[in-house]
Image 1 (cartoon, one colour):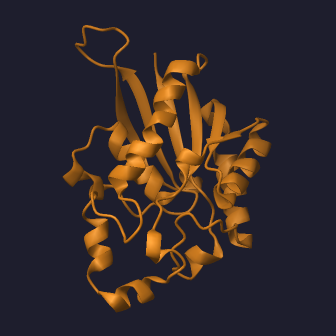
Image 2 (cartoon, one colour):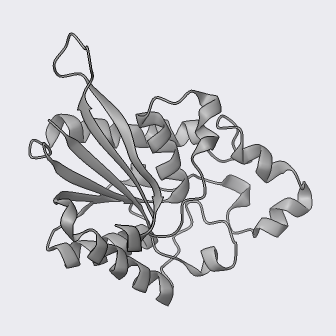
Amino acid sequence: MKRRLILLRHGQTDYNATRRMQGHLDTTLSALGEEQALRAAKGLRGFGIGKIVSSDLSRARRTAEIVAGELGLAFSEDARLRETHLGQWQGKTHEEVDGADATIRAHWRNNAAWAPPEGESRLDVAKRARPVVDELMDSYTDWDDAAVLLVAHGGTISALTSSLLGFAEQQYPLLKGLGNTHTSQLVAMPRYGAQDPGEVQWYLEAWNQGPDAL
């Protein structure tokens, strides 16, 4: 049994291009983002993807729609795959957040348990998103020797990947800088030496791989 999981970040938005923080704001793909999504879709053709699940935010949902169309598949939505809620930072540029405290974003990036004011931490996001994968492991019977694609957001993908790999809190900051339409790729296989034959372990195959390398 070998199950591949591909986590794809959405295409570029105008907020990405202008370094403005989105979080749960429902932004849309830019023209470049649409092109990126199509290029990613073409790169995903040979992965044996049988199921696609997307965040319900428009930028991820549109990316999933483009990929699903290219692969000839349907897709479903799950709000648990939304981006990190950034609280009072949502809608602000990096410079505006830094203007209040030049060290605060660095503190946030390097402390998985810390959340922006009225927002979520990466640990919160991992706790929210992890059940999506766990439920699919139990319910999606055609996953063996195939792939599932989740279309989501940079912060969510980082947190979820860290959780699946069993990272300790202090290890979460190791995974960052995921580009638009770049992927995190994992595989689940039976855990070596486990007494329960159904026990699996997740392994990282690729991080921050762009569409041209797929």
